[in-house]
Image 1 (tube, rainbow, N blue to C red):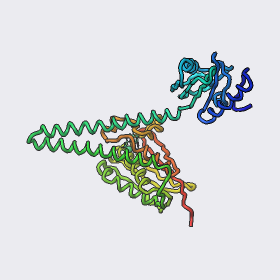
Image 2: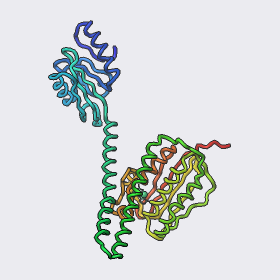
Image 3: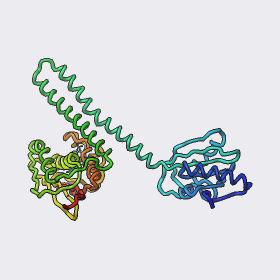
Image 4: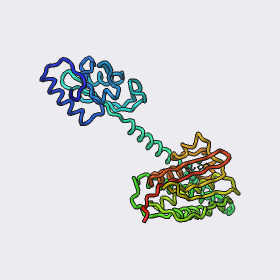
Length: 350
Ligand SMILES: Nc1ncnc2c1ncn2[C@@H]1O[C@H](COP(=O)(O)OP(=O)(O)OP(=O)(O)O)[C@@H](O)[C@H]1O
Ligand SMILES: [Mg+2]
């Protein structure tokens, strides 16, 4: 048996010519191909079509595909439609692009491509653009209003001072949002690590603590780094420092003033572990996976106060992945959280 798994009564030469062309076409372009007669009986079905659950007892399973073929029968050229196929052997609903076209005088060719992954990507991209626009709108709107307020404040120096400091805060928020977006795009586009060099993680940790010093003082939180010996991996210094900085920043922001944050570094079975522990508000179990999604915040109203946009952990997750590692989380609401960045040590011992 060739590409096609079933046959019907047609003259030998017709079948040969037909099969040759049809199998070539389907081989090249389609996930699944079906050929039907004028009564919508299935004459041929590629293995893909059978696997896909499109055909049963020589009939098309999905009425939406039958309707597409009927439409194509009444016109010249192909009819193309994207649709969700819910029933059939396929347990999960799948997005497909289906194309039907008359083939010869009597036949109908139906080609079906699985577009589920492409559709998911498209949805994610659309959501992302909508989220970015929304996040940009808030500070931009505030900056406009504050500028008008300054203009209207006349000679009142007290009001001008008050509005200006709000203006500066909103501008900082806008700047950090744009910076985070650029970081995210950088770490997302790096398939692996182009410029991997030997990086001492103990330097990364103390640098990341330094970068949070002002914030920690402002919130009266002591950041305690354990004095660990040097531990080297192959990686991108700036990315690693950003990841650890983001984790420490969260630990500070989501804790009460007066508490402590601990940062540890150790090696466990060939994996370097950087852990950041706080005794802050904690994260409910149901949210622990979602917080790594872009723009996801457990409490958006609190984030409005802190100026968080929900990109920090998405960046951390990508950086971990770029280094062949992962981020682990242990957290209990009201008790605190520990985020652990696990990075395989790829350096050869000399
Ligand atoms: N250490 C922590 N303790 C409690 N909640 C946390 C902690 N770290 C993160 N979260 C929760 O996870 C959410 C996502 O964190 P993420 O760092 O991605 O964004 P963000 O802090 O809101 O904003 P930013 O992009 O400025 O970092 C936070 O809004 C917060 O609800
Ligand atoms: Mg954050």
